[in-house]
Length: 352
Image (cartoon, rainbow, N blue to C red; front, side, top):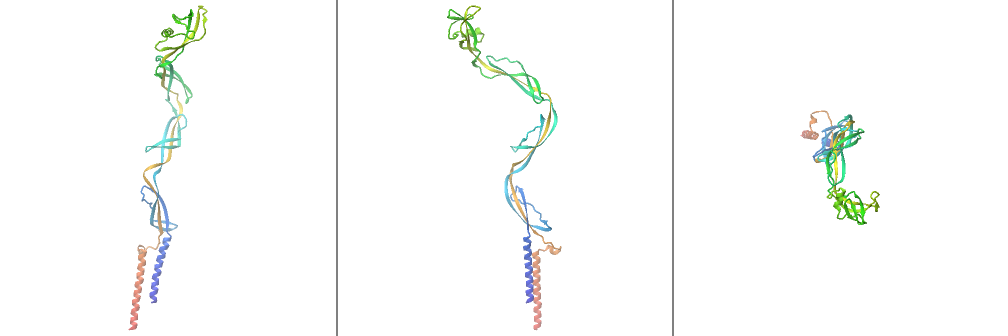
């Protein structure tokens, strides 16, 4: 009976050792985290099947993954090389507009390289105007216009001959004030005054013109369809003309003309002196957050590793530990049975 008890205790001890070894291996597990960005919401990071840390080899047990965040944008690096030619100074824009997917983004200047060059064939559009003011008929401007411009880049003055491009009528024809017509009348019999051969009834308040408009305008040399008299006034008292001895008085006729304003426009492309300048190569870039065609998932994957128990290589290395323990238990049970049978046979012989 004592032998049977010893055998059972040995079996129990083997089971405890096996259980303790399994628990110890579980307590020594390590975890390794890895974050990935993918369009697959069920994706997970890839891990090595075995790793070595501090001289200990670990084997992969499991990988668990969780989605940390979802994004519809991504940070993209955009860059552009821009060439600027015929620059007067070493200056380029600090930013550059960049079109992407129908949207405009701003790139920032990162670097620029300059090289000297001679800028030839410089031109500038030069224009000039001549205003004719109010005209009763369209004026006939000169066919060309002389002017001088200052070219800041070269520091030189440039003479220009500009051809006539067009004559613009700025306003429609309308009645507007014109320069008064001066007049001197000869007064006789205190009832009339004469302007040339025209006799007009005298009016002490103002020169009389009513009924004599056409005659007065024609006498003064004005077109009666383009000018009209709108008023009159004496500009001084009566006096005696020293040459004729006749009594005279000075006045004026206030008139308007039916006119429009005109401007003659001159313009030409003028050649300018050659100057020293620069060609530039500018590098622009920016880190921009741009929309993506599909959602991107940030996934945290955690891999669990446990230590690998290393033994001398033998055929038993390819047998699972549980099977090996079970085989030992069965062997022990078999030994117990054999011992029991042998013991029983001995007892039977002694009894006989």
